View: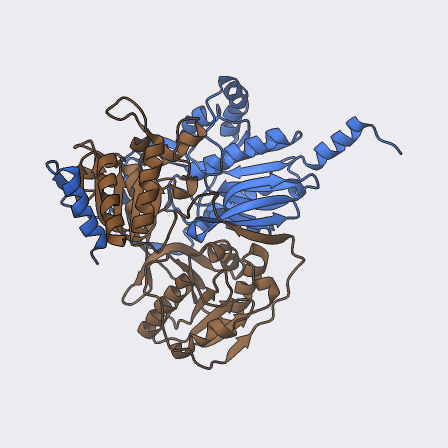
Length: 344
Length: 283
C-alpha cells in the first residue's frame, strides 16, 4: 500500500471558541487511522481565531494548521471552500477526513474537485486490513456497502455519532497559519434562526427520539379528532423526558394540505425516506404504522419501542424491540404523569 | 428620459427573470423492496429496470420550488435535467409532467445509486453547459441536497464547481428574492435551525431539502403541454457512460439486523407507562 498522509479538517461551533463535537469525532477517527497506517497526521482548523480550539489538540501529536480571520467566522461556501483547499494543499494529504457537518458538507466536494481528488460521504466506519475501506449506506440506509479507492486524494466525510469525540488536556501548541486570498464575497450570513416554536423540539444529543405519526391527528374512539390534546401530550412528554421530536412525512404534510396539524411540527422534524436519519440510543414511535419509508430513518436508533393500535403494524415485523398494542393518548398521558412526578 | 410605469415594470421583470436548471434523478419507489446484486458492471439492484420509479424526492421539491419561483418572476424558464434510462424516464415523466411546467433535458444513462458521483456530475455539467439559450448570469442551479439512491450530497456541488458557481447553498428550505435581484436563503444546519444568508444574486446553486411547498396536484393541462416537449427530448437523449473513477465495492449487502419483536397486547396503559418510564430512565 502506498504511503498515506492524513489530514483531518475541523471547524469551531457557532460560538467560535471550541471545536464541534463532530470535528472531535473526526479527530478520533484520524488518530486511529494514522496509528494503524503508521503515517503522518495533520489537523486543519477553520475558525476566526484558532488559538483556543487548537489547544485541546495538544495531545494528538499532530501537525496543526489553521485558516483564521473574520471571513472564516461564518459558514459560507466561498470562504470555507477556499480555507479547506488551502489547508489540503498545505498538508499535501492523501486522505482527508472531515465531519459531515452542514458547514463541511457544503464545501467538501468542491474542495475535492479543486484538488483533483475523490470524495465519499456519510461514512459510518473506516476499516480494512491492507487498504482503507469505508462503510456507507445507499438508498436511504437500506443497503450497506463497503467501498475502497486507489486514487488520491480521497476525501471521507464522517457521519456524526460514529466515533467517540477526542478529549485531551489543553496545552501549548504551535499552529501554522495558512494565508487564504479570498475573492469578493457575494454571500453574507445574517443569523441562525430557530423554528418559530414554543420550544426547541429537535435535540440531536437527546438520549431518546420520540416520533409522532399521523395517528395523533386521526379520529379517536369518540369519533372526533383531538389535535390540541395530542399537541399538549407530546409537548409535555418532550419537556418531561428531554427527548428529540421526530415525525412521519404524512403528519408534516398534513399542514400543507389544510388538515389539522400539530403546530410545532415542521419538515425539519421529518424522519425517514425523505427526512433525517438521526442517531439516538433509544427511540419511541407513537401512532405511526412503521412501514419501510418511515423505518429507514430509524437505522441508527439502537433500542426501539412503538405504541400502536394495530397489532399487525410494520413495527411488529422485526423492526422494533417492543410494540405496545395500546392507545397512545392514554399511555403518553400516564407516562407524563409518572415523568412529572419523578421530576418533582 | 422618462419611462412609463409599464416600461419600468418590464425592466424590473426582465431583471428578475431567472433561468432555473433543476437536476433530478429517478429512484425506486420507496415502498419497493430492494435487494442488491452484483453484476459484470458492479453492484446494482435486483430487477432494477422493472422496479417502479419516482422522481428523486428532494429533487422533486426543488422542481416544485423552481416552478413556483418561475411563476412569480415572469420571463423565467425551468429546465429539468435528468440522467437515467430513457424508458424509465418516460415512465416517471408521465406523472411529473402534470406537476409543474418545465423543459426536459434527458441524458440516457444508467440508473441507480452505485455509479460514482464524479462521473454523473461530469455528464450533467457538460449537458447544462450546452443548453441552448441558457444565460449563465441568470442561472439558478437547483437539485436535491441528497438523492434517495446514492445519498452522497456531492453531485450538485460538483456540477456547480464545474460550472464555476461559487455561491452554493445546501439543505435549502426557502429562497426569497428582493427587487434588486439579491435573495435570502434558509439552509438547514444542526439542531433544527436554519442559517439565514443573503446572496447578491445569480448565479447560485441551491440544494433543496423539503422546502415549504406541498406537492402540486396533477394538472392534466400542464401535463399535455409538457409532454409535447418531453417525448422529443427523450428521443434526442444522448447516451452517457459513467466512469468508475477507481471506486471499488468490497461488499454490498442488506442490513441483517432483524429484531425479535415482543408484541405486548395485554397490559393496561398504566402498566405500559411504568415499563416505558423505567426503560427511558435506564442507562
